[in-house]
Length: 487
Image (cartoon, rainbow, N blue to C red; front, side, top):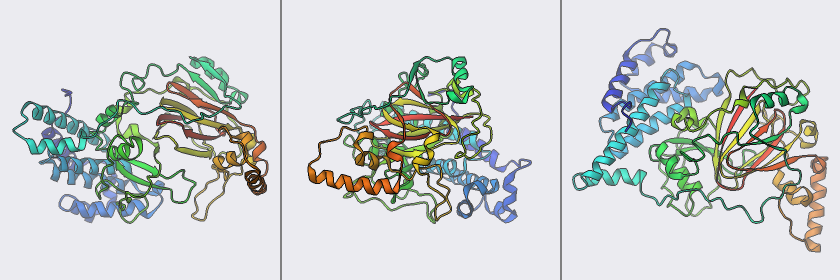
């Protein structure tokens, strides 16, 4: 146990002080006198009120006061549970309350306090398990509760890395370089002509996430998430462009057992406590029937490292993210964005078969591959017309950064642009393909002739993805990547 970790008694007292000590100025005051008077005695009502306010308007328009009300109401509920925090059920509820607050609000003004709670819980759970091991006969019931949440399944020492057979074939490989210095990279991006994809080898070999504290080890990831108790937002479905795609908030353990470790562990039984959805009148979702085939689950574009700082300590921001790329005024399909003070980090963690459909981003990107392998295909900005960008949908969401073309369908119709080995077709099959090509060409003229580059990105490698380049990414194995957006 870390000697710097606060005890549960210390964090409880600190939380009481923080909640009862007035801060000036404090945005929570904008919630009104009635809500503030109700908060200490009936946090449940305040939590429901804040939740409603979070969903009344687009998230970017939510006032900070309602986010503050949500986290403070959650902390009051945590205090009620804290006296039983060594019991499994209470620990799970405390973690759920704190993580829901982090995911839904960012916990403004309470970030450090929430992180101290997780540090204290981890220390308390570690101490409890050590005491149980020493005196097994004294507390058999508590051991059963704790172990069922954190130690029960047969966890492999690594994710499977078997490539699909046959493996993808690269038609136009992306250029590679080794151990590129910041000055050399700056020289490349100082001219817009240098804004072309590049794979950099040897740039992140010092990361503990590769070997010392390996993210390819499921046991390590479960340990860093309080035995898998931590909650994460998961995209469910092939990709965000497909019907039936959705988002759920589940425990890290359920994500691992359901989507990452199929065959190694019995999936956790869905419960009301472990399921949640965005944009819903309720924060729970019905369980998926076991008879149905499990859809793909993907922890995608999530700031996991703000939520779980212990994982942030396993990586470092590549120096390339502090370069100054030349401005690209010719990228008319990219909306202007403000200058970033620091790179934006996001985690991408999922099983083989996860897909990011053809799209563009408004920032330069260093995509660092930590575990597993991905196939990437990129199209230059001048091919934008041939990629047929979407427009504003019926719901009012601007999808102009995403192509209408499903690349997997395109590769099935046009074997010449496919990364997969095509089987010989009989005459009947060829007639069907000819008809499909005719329909596809009518819908998406010019796409089959659009120029592209591609690569297989492996552990320890970084892909420089320039702003404005269209990209499609598919996991070939279970995969963990980190993207660093910068401008």
